[in-house]
Length: 437
Ligand code: 5CA
Image (tube, rainbow, N blue to C red; front, side, top):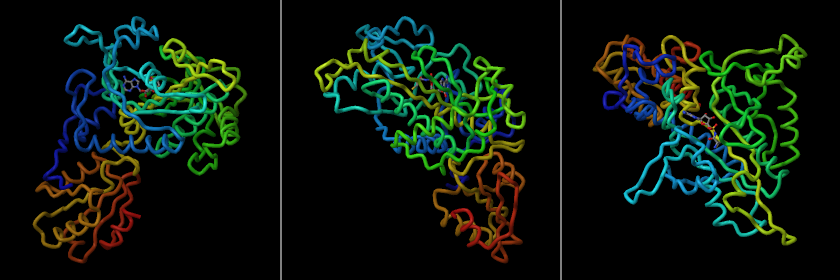
């Protein structure tokens, strides 16, 4: 995209309402605008990031064998009366009435709806196991929406729901999701650590939260530094092999990790000091096993091979897709702005034309822009060089291709890596190769 023709409204001033770095930077870099308390519009750059994150989440869900669906945001209250959650959910639920005075709600989660949909289509015990997910907007009328997209009222979630015939099957589904999550967060450039968690209103008796480390995080965490060193993408666990999942689980449980509420000081004392890590973190995912909590009241049942009635065991698996945008920025920024991991950046490179109208600069910029296509944001505005440097750092492109008249006269450009600040002078072809390689 050409910046002169783009709607990327960056701000020089720090907005007053933003208390944490990610919120400030998301507003300043023109990613989002608030439209009501806890409700945000996603502008072109922010929307690109959100879609990049959703795509990585999708690819890892698909690789685990889960199937994507799309359920509506609006749900019927009757569904929730059936599970018994309608009254209990309280004021966090946004309740609506249609013109016939029927009670509706804006979904805060989808256990009831997916259970009913699955029940209406499943025919036999042979149809198991299955896992269905969607990436859809949710609404929770939080008392205190804050920190921008981190705790919004409307937010984008990936929620998956597994269906198994028995507990043993459900445990395999749970482990699959856990491995898929470790890989997903690593691809997003994050270190996320799973911690045993309480189940809250979702219910059930096995649950983990995935916590990304950031000083502004809401929970205090204690964990084994070994978690930081494992490469889940290189690890050769086959997500479709139960024995591999067992080995993966053993590896996970061999390492200590706990939030404040679950912290066990006795076990902690046994861990070598060099491996002890303490910090704060942001919950970016949460997974639950809850057995027949929804299948039983919602009437999901199949006949087993021996004619007996089976009530399937379920789990649900959430990732806060919009919260991840904030979490990634919390984990990766400096005083000058955002430092996007390559995998989620809105554009892989910014092209900075330091002298618009200079024939050599213009020609080189056009050449680079053509070669990089949609992966580049070309700063072709009639701004001073200083303003272009500041905006490129703020927007956080992983690479900056800086084109000034002196270098351009010799066919050279400067390539800057945002994360390290490293700069090198290269030929146009080499710079393009580095960015695309
Ligand atoms: N049904 C289950 C799993 S599908 C569920 O709703 N789990 S949850 O309540 O833990 O939400 C899943 C994830 O959504 C959380 O881990 C968090 O990352 C994100 N999330 C929850 N509330 C908000 C919010 N108010 N703003 C932004 N993200 C949120």
